[in-house]
Length: 180
Image (cartoon, one colour):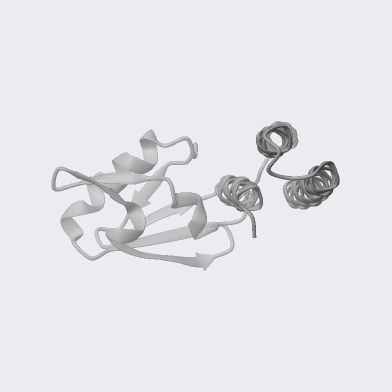
């Protein structure tokens, strides 16, 4: 795999990571991936301070290994952009996800499309950089015109493949969000 394909793969992985943090009305432990808590003065990922489980379809349960950190976990969730209110029973923190409204689904759908477009722009920028590198090699006489044309075709094919993958991801996530 060439360096430009690796960069395109990273753009795709980044999009997948972004999509995993968008909630589709169901509880998913990945929604908490970007949340960090102040754990004894150190920003620590939520997954590192306790066990996250899904006892019901719309509920996440966070059982910290150190019960003193419950208040910090609640505070981190409240200040996040999840838009939910956590509760606790002294041992665990519970997050109940409400049913998504039609307006919220449409808003999330637009956000998904925007993230998809951003990923496509990233892939196209990588294509441009790769093409410029190939043209420089051609001008410097390092490769022939035929080799330059072949490389540009390979770059375009890779770009088309990654753009199609992004479109498919956007379509699947939008379908997931819009499904009641």
